[in-house]
Length: 106
Image (cartoon, rainbow, N blue to C red; front, side, top):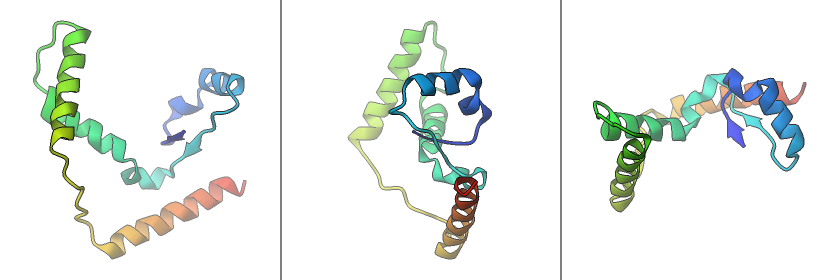
């Protein structure tokens, strides 16, 4: 599993679960590279465009709204267009790689 460095992923109960399920391994993204976590961007889009300001009287209604957003999103997929300059992206990748190397070398 690729996860961010949020402390909940390192909680003793999570570690115990992982110990009981050895086929799963945590791979942490560097703290300086949260922009690599594209699922967070997608969750933000669901929140901003699918459920914000909604009034849901049950979990089922909330789930339905999320599923409707995902279905509409998938019906008309659009490529993600990077707006950052290539040099800025490469600099972040370099910093992220250095942080990852530091973590894995210990």
